Image 1 (tube, rainbow, N blue to C red):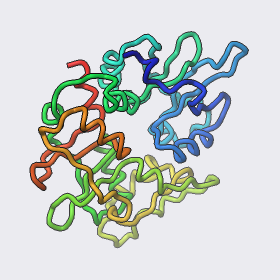
Image 2 (image 1 turned 45 degrees about the horizontal axis):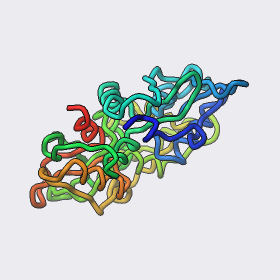
Image 3 (image 1 turned 30 degrees about the vertical axis):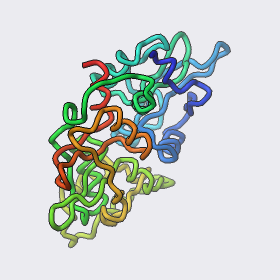
Length: 283
């Protein structure tokens, strides 16, 4: 199976055309559960691919408005590339969305596209979840403010956190997408760093407050300060170590999730992410 069989074609991909602004990209990323958007330059011969702008780039450069200064250097691929090869590229380059370019912008292939091919049985794969899951699980307390949990995701460099209750048991899962859905784009130039907890709030760590204006350029984005339990998914889908990779992929697609906690009985013992499933294609 090749990229052409799994990719999203150009006509179905939302892009941002130069010159464009960061506001165009911010609105797109908030409306859709994606981490980046392709930038193209319209020409008489078709759209010319110029780069990819990620959410991280917008966050790390809050005062930069020119799209050409925000674009990331990411790998590209062609329609003829095998799914095994693109899976390896995604894992090794940490690239969730890979533009398909052959002279002009042809479309994009995502981690989810590859997972869908596995789930549908279009791409055969062997192995069980226990062979690829990680025992290192990112967690947070369900009562922590969402602003704190968001910081924890950033520092851990992962798109999820498993929420724990007062007894230390798994009570839900909070993802990057959950946070984006409740974030609010702020109009104007006013700093709004006060969206963190009050000075006397036990969660108002000085370290968190100090970096608020950097990571959350609050002239662009505000995040609610309610507890994680208000925003997490508490209907948690799980797998066991013996669950097949194909079945894990099917659960990811049917539940529209990118990671699944691995349990023994009701005990949390690990996590399998969609990129872990991709490894089964080429190992």
